[in-house]
Length: 253
Image (cartoon, rainbow, N blue to C red; front, side, top):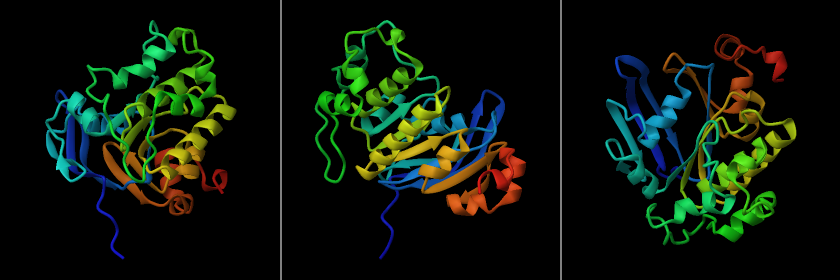
């Protein structure tokens, strides 16, 4: 049986910041109900890849296809409306807005997503569904975002993305600054999202988390992929682990 067409296809993209050449011909594919993780040291281009897909730093060359349609050159606003949501590094919630107001943003008239319809095979997210997933947010609906703990802010950032009912979620370092218990909760959330039909492109520094949840892993080094394969294949590749991630295979056995 043939594999389904990719939901996201990144083909030979080259991305710059001004004159700085950051991504050197990256390609990857991601299907519905799949998690693909991007690993690598700081400054290797992980976040730039997320920004390239989201239209925040568009590639100068190459193609990004979402649902078979090119999104290169489209505004971040249009890409969001097409069904891609981002959970950015550092959470980026609106600290002066309440939890309720933060969650309402993706369904506001300005966002253009207020009438998103349920999609067969994928969970449809409403405010009640998000609050059921994150009961701690339900207890703080009228609290300012800035008053939440770091873990609560991360839940709010994920919940806000879900309110857009995206097909694809871009997650940039969702475990950053979280306790081991909360990292485990993020892992559970990602597994649940995959099971409910969402696709996730995950950028992570936490190797254990990525190995646990990802279907496939790409290791990036100086703007190029140094490895592509399954978590099991990565754990067996001592050279990649040591050279590009700074860990020994004994630590991931």
